[in-house]
Length: 80
Image (cartoon, rainbow, N blue to C red):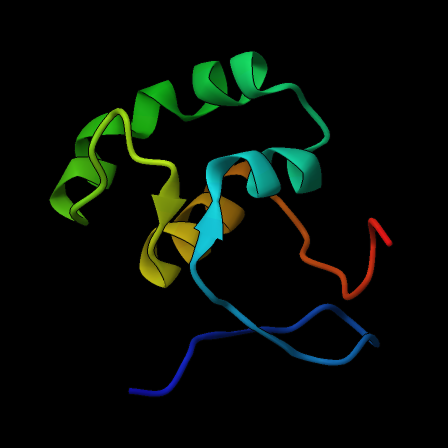
């Protein structure tokens, strides 16, 4: 199965992969508490994707969905 691709303008394309919620929260620029509040309206949609409330690891489909809904940009080596 081919990974989803997110185009970052003039930056190189990055494959969407499974991510920890805490990792995605860093890209979102918020604490875990704030990130949980931000994704709360999407709880039912995430459940349909197989993500439980206590899940720490988000599947690629859920990462792509949240990036689109919350305008999260995934840039290579942003936190290194």
